[in-house]
Amino acid sequence: MLDLDMSAEIDALRATFADIRTVLDVDKLTDDIERLSAEASAPGLWDDTERAQQVTSRLSHAQADLARVKSVEQRIDDLEVLVELANEAGDEESADEARTELTGLQRTIADLEIQTMLNGEYDARPAVVTIRAGAGGVDAADFADMLLRMYLRWAEHHGYAAKVLDTSYAEEAGIKSATFEVDAPYAFGKLSIEAGTHRLVRMSPFNSAGKRQTSFAAVEVIPLMEEATEIEIPDTDIRIDVFRSSGPGGQSVNTTDSAVRITHVPSGIVVSMQNEKSQIQNRAAAMRVLQSRLLLMQREQEAAKKKELAGSITASWGDQMRSYVLAPYQMVKDLRTEFEVNNPSNVFDGDLDGFIAAGIRWRSMKDA
Image 1 (cartoon, rainbow, N blue to C red):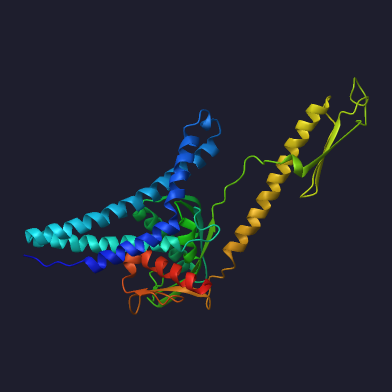
Image 2 (image 1 turned 135 degrees about the horizontal axis):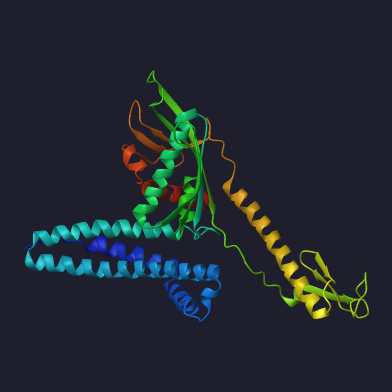
């Protein structure tokens, strides 16, 4: 007869999970899935490919979040049953399975708990990451390439869609820079922890004397913004004036009030159109131009916001946020959180979750 008692641990899991459910707002998540499912099944959705991709991507992410929550809930119930069965049957193998599942559940719930701390304006968005070689010559270019592989492996481990958008190769080895996108829920919130200057210390494979070399690389992380392809302009935001066209005559062009001037009151943008023959045509043409100008203005504002979010990263001595040391000892240490591991090869193979979790907790405490 076994006496396997996990009641305290299971109660703690249930309590933490209840808080997570509240923060994640499962009811709203369910409503969002219903709404997005209706949009995804609407006729003509794929007439606008970009919008269709946005809808289906949001739906997929929301369904994945809900499935994860329901899976954890079921796993806690199953663990409780497994412990009871192990005790009744005196089965040590089932007891070992229960202990393994408890560890797995604790890790999964810790991951979900971290997600509840990602409540910034852009945290839930996909991420665009740019890596640039800094000081250190060819070693820095090689280090930048190592970081690129590290992040792509991290995304691969989690099943996140990652796509390299641009790569500039260095002459001897490695890369000067690379930009990639990670399309996953909360990718920006998680990867924004990685923004800053990274430092590598190792015996240089590019130095014939085999001297220890220090090199740097900069990591920039910005959210992937939704780019509006159509600007909705409320009637209350515009003032429309009509007047008689000027210039060369012909038919009714300058004999009727066919010209149109549209003023967008919030921005002060003014568009006039008088080339068409009718007021209706001129109004439609003016609205198209106004929409284009507002879209351009929005993109400029988004670009400025991205630059602000990215911050200034110099990739040199004095401002590093993480050190990767391969010689004379083995260690990777985050200088902000003090989190460290002694297996750099695992880290370079994408094992970043410990650093990301520690960074999110550090940021949450700092902002509290």
